[in-house]
Image 1 (cartoon, rainbow, N blue to C red):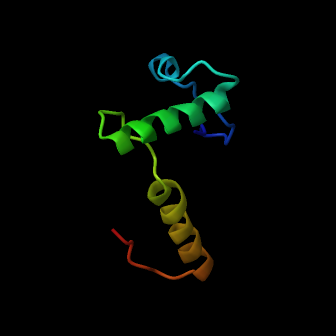
Image 2 (image 1 turned 135 degrees about the vertical axis):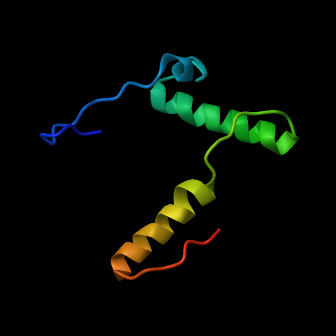
Length: 78
């Protein structure tokens, strides 16, 4: 987030979200462990929080980047 003078403002991650991360290694490792935990629960058919998928993080971002590079309007795939 930026304020009027374009100075970056650091936004803190809410404590409730940090409390849900596994306590392993550093923060990055905890996030990967949480993703693996939720993905495994999904595969087993167990309840789990929603998580980002390849479609969210990879494919859709690549579609946007390709459209920007092509400098043309494209229909967003569903």
